[in-house]
Amino acid sequence: MTRKLATLAELSPDDRQAIEHALTATRFVPPKQTLVYEGDTPDVTHAILDGFACRSKHLDDGGRQIVAYVLPGDFGAFQGAAAVTLDYSVTALSGCLVAEIPRSLMLRLLARPPIAQALWRLALQEASILRAWIANNGRRDSESRIAHLVCELYVRLRAVGRVEGNTFQLPLSQEDIADTAGLSTVHTNRCLQSLRSQSLIRFKGGALEILNPNGLAKLCSFNPGYLSVGMDESFETAALEGIVPGENELSFSRPRPQAFT
Image (cartoon, rainbow, N blue to C red; front, side):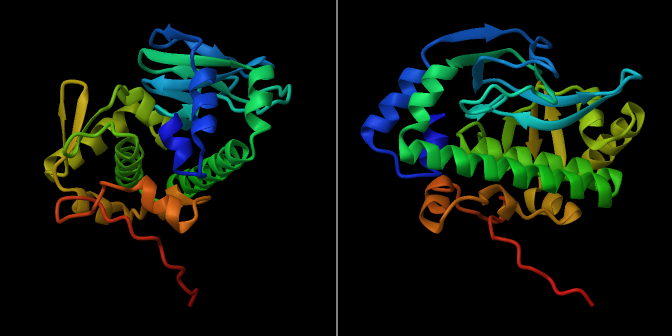
C-alpha cells in the first residue's frame, strides 16, 4: 500500500510511517467471504494487503457483474472519511490479508496533504479503469475482452511486485472471468481455449503465464496508459521503475488520441 501511494505523491518519512501505522489492524479473510455488502454503510476502510478481491453488482435474478478487481495495495471500498452507503459489494476471491482502517484514523491520514493527494489520484485511476472496462465490454469481441483483462492484471500486479517473469497468480474461476466480461461460462471457456491454442497464454496450477505478451496486447489493442491517469511524469516513472519493456514484455507507452474520420 505504501509503495503504491508513493507512486502517486511525494511522501515524507512521517507520511509513510502514518500509512504503515494505519495498516496494523489486520485479519485474514477466507475465499468467497464478503467484506461489505451493497447497502452497507461501513465504518472502516478495507485495504487489501494480499490476495484478490472484487467489487460487484448483483441483479434480482441472481446474476452478478464484477465491476472492479481489488489487488494488493488497493482499497476494497474507499469512502474516505464520509459515512457512505455502498452501491456495490466487496468479496474476497482468494484468501486475503485485509487491514481495517477506522474512519477516525482515515481522517488523520487525509489531514496530511501528500496522502490526501495520493488518495485523490488513486480515485482518478480507479475511474479511468472503470471507463476502460466499459469500453472493453461494450465494444470489443469476447476473446479480446478477456485478453484485455489479462493484460491489465499483468500490468497492475507487476507494478506492485507480484509478477515473476511473465507469470502471476490468478485465483479466478471461469465464472469470475465470465462475470467480469459479461459472458456465459461456456463461452468464456471457449475464449480461454482459443487464447491457449494461439500460444498466447497458459495456465500452470493457479498461475497464468503470458507466452507472447505483445501478441496478446495486439489482439486486444491494449495500451496501459489509462492505468497511469492521475500521475505526473515523475511519479509515472517511479511507478514503472524496473518494468522496462523488452521484446517479450508489454509496451508501456501512453495512448495517442486518434481523430475521427
